Length: 223
Length: 223
DNA sequence: TTGACAGCTTACTTACTAGTAAGTTAATAT
DNA sequence: ATATTAACTTACTAGTAAGTAAGCTGTCAA
Image (cartoon, rainbow over all chains, first blue to last red):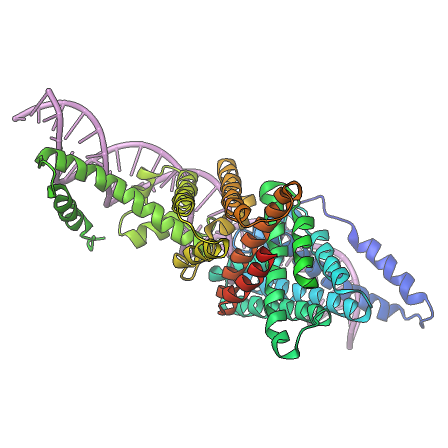
């Protein structure tokens, strides 16, 4: 407990630097910002770690004790930021939502083929993974143990993720417009299930089957 | 605790009935069988319930207290049959394996098309489900929290399930034999991921997307 | 009839869970 | 200088988890 980290100083310096560039320098404003940043930073740290642990072990299996030990603070400190476990859980779902939105906006700008965008999506999924799986998948598995608000959030996340895939896939679709909608929706479910499945198999079997699966998916998309 | 169930009598009667049909009737043999059946029955009850709860809430989330309350016995009674939670977990994985084997043998006999067999497989998956998901999928999600022996069992189950799907899919494959193996394997991963994914979405979104997904899969298989 | 055993129960321990209450500290606002 | 506040800590509660030890009961073999 005596070995506390020194992020306080380094964050403050970084922020000072940014403020000085072309802005009027106001020391009190700066200090105020730093204090906000600090608070947000610790909250962010907690949510980040919780998200990682949900990928690895699931919502049910993580405890405030895990979190506090890994962050070098007390359990009560985490309760200060997130009074109930449910509050933290909701914050994590919101973080996942933000990540999805940032991906969506990054991809709507760019002019890539459908295959490239799918590839991009899977790469992004794997980047965060390590020994974990898709966090939405993890929360879906714990669904019946989740508090009601989280159930709702997970449902919304699932729908949002589907919407993103439908957005991607609609571009590449060349059939009649009538049948298109349902066809694309089915394809979106298929693609998502496969990506999430690939992550599960990677961890369970220690084998990266995603390239193989991606091939199959591209066959479907091209048709 | 005073409201104990009356399965003892009804089981005994059922068994008596079966024994009498064309068999020499030996009372002591019967009683001995009943006692064996009883023991196996309770163990079977526990494993059945544990399997169901793993589908619904996952291995981590189930407790001996849940199990004992739902069976109308004490926690200690379950510890008598399965000393450690790991022992029960292993028993559940073995049950899942038996189920898979019985399906495999039922399907190797019959002369169905690949599409029909796939359909059969998914129907079987859904039959047990209720508010649950694929039990292998559930165990995969809890993978990092499982004791080592269970990790191994889940790995073997996953491989066995894949082998079954490869068996089914190999029949319907008409390409070069050289590329066939890897192609079929990739297809097996894809199909399994989709079925498991469909169950997840069914529970999370309350929408049965399996028919849609199955359509997509058949497109892949037919190619 | 006796002894052994299966299949329990009651009563317990130890460890961990989420959550809370009250006090500490350092920075800031007035 | 003083009061207030954010962000903690220490120290606790109550509940639940797995697991154990010892005793009870009905069946059964000898």
